[in-house]
Image 1: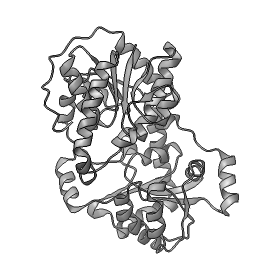
Image 2: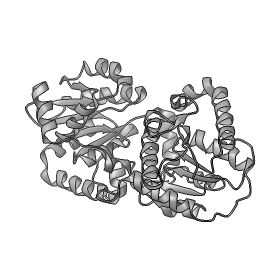
Image 3: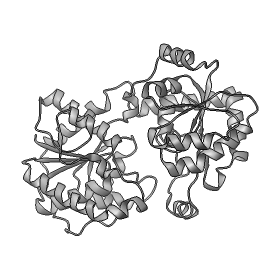
Image 4: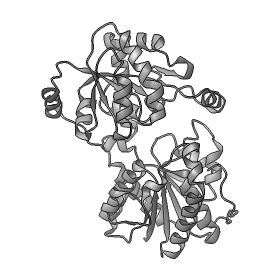
Length: 393
């Protein structure tokens, strides 16, 4: 096997590194080529260019770099063809990765392709799976209900587990050290307004007002990332409770492990909370245009992965127009005082972790086994797609 791997952001770098470690453990050192970050480079890859060039979110950010990204797409596709690789593994970042795959498949229809992280067609834009099918042979899915959707579109697919089940969690000693360092005296409330500046700007004031409506005093811990730390500090100054703001990774793990409850932005953080058995309420707001678009495109009645994977609706959500303190505070008060509600959430979280692969092989190893199994199968060559760049991958 001579793989060429492409990851476009930090989460993909983590998935790619675990996959590479699994492949190396089973097959020995491989000639890894591609685009990746520091974790994939530590597993033996020399990146074609810095992965951070691809970590761009939003139309306003992408437009100024549009032509540069187009050049990178063409450059990467040519590098795949010139590399001697016989397997292309793209990891998330579909707007970049699938455009590369399209050019590679147009030039060499027999080229084997794997995509790691199924598109969330169960939530919105179901046509994405059909657009992928001419470009991708095999998909590695993070969620257990995704393989049937990918297979219906014409690709083989294996559920390999979600990386959250393999992430290191803090123990009692870590929590005790955090308490001692910062003088924390009780289980605390986690405030998690998001990791992007737009999210923080919208949600931090709502969290502050929600805190003012709580029926009992709480200590508040706010783990964040350096990219929004300044904004978090600025916006939280008006909160009725001064939060303890953490950016260190080990301290953030301890903060999750010792929390009594959380108010969190919608996203994969709900799975991190579930892994640490932290009951939660979810809140999220967006622009009016985004609200209208989401309302027309969304196919599901909940956006929280714990609710979806556990097939329950025990995690309360306050989205869009409902993201208001007068609605959120009663739910958070009830969660802090109602043992039955807490237990229902804990049961759903336990089931979620089991269904995401906790207790089995680590996801990186399962992904490696899936890739090897696919690679050993004969494949049927699909007709080459048009060389026109995808309009909506």
